[in-house]
View (cartoon, helix red, strand yellow):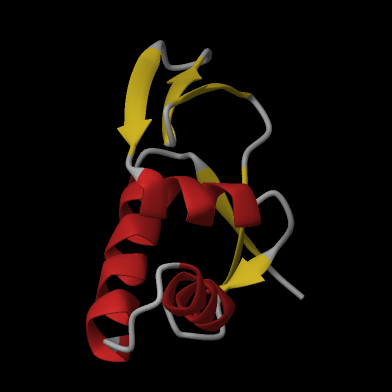
Length: 93
């Protein structure tokens, strides 16, 4: 995974907003996931293809932080978790 890698979420998820956190169900796998507000922000952006660089910049701006290194690491870890659970796809251009 590089900063330029582009991802998009899978459409098959059932999603409910619970006070800023998302609760998602993967119907095919029968599994549930809960995502905090930062993860919810990223998930919303992934409706359209997004690079890790763009996601990091958006989180930095939306949550008013300047800790680029930490946010970048957190975004990469979150995307890795989503990918490992087959919730996102890598988009090839």
